[in-house]
Length: 400
Image 1 (tube, rainbow, N blue to C red):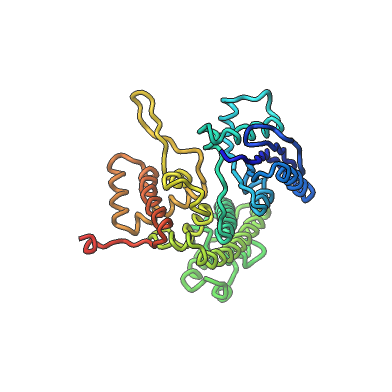
Image 2 (cartoon, one colour):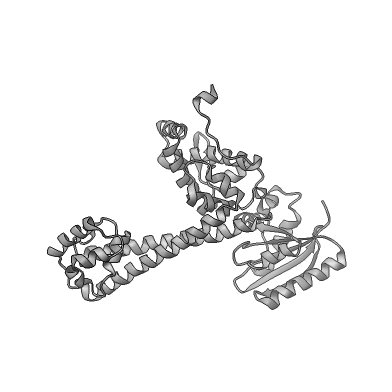
């Protein structure tokens, strides 16, 4: 064990508890810092004082990496300190096995420091601490942008559901001309008048002037106008419908701008470019996975990556019962992207479709079969990224 100066940070919303000690287990100092410029400066001034006194390299463990800990975690790396992310669930298990006298921020910080000191001796302590590997800036940007895009897409889905429900209640039959409210031409039609009831009097020339509306859609609208009816709630629900339609148009524009930025960044990310060569991953899933993976240095092997992506269920056996359960230490965003990519891969690659059908024939559910396919795709991804190779699907003649 190399002697180190070890720092444990119990992260809070506005204040953080810090415990400083030696790798041998000796506690040197405890203090609180505010989450502001003065607090961050105090952190590095006090840690630096111990660093100069003991002449040892510094390692920092903290909860909330890339969350409430920002920008403290970024500055720790910029100072050249080693940074470890603390797994909250495994820390809780550690506290159950080695309970403290009470639950408080000072006790939690000391427990983290104790676990930090035992990481070279106790497997549970070692597994709870994951060293943060340096990540290319382009992947950090992809992570931020793809998460933002996902949030906006989810918002658009919520607004669309609300809009459709209101349309069915206020003007029966209007939604039938499209079936899905999230269409550019339909949203332009809904927002072309400030009063929803005025839609039944829009002339054909005005309809054809709207973006996305041609003679076919104009004919459907004209047919609806001849039998249009509105409920008594249109006076107050109608403005809400128009407001939601405008919000959906705005979201479409913002999401499109984000996608353009993501596409440009993905061209400079090796991980995104490699993954994009696998059929089915495409311009949505590949950048999202590149941002969430960040760097292969974070993972001990392909099985660790598969667990992180949610493609490796854990055994759940007891006596004669045998089964599996989903792991809890999963990146849910990356798992969702992998499930979509696996489904698209099965639809485009005959070998993947045959594997999926085989799992279904064995009694697996749709999601279980996709996860099994995703597990194989993770092996392929790991090999591609490790050896710097793009995906290549061999033809039967090449195999022969």
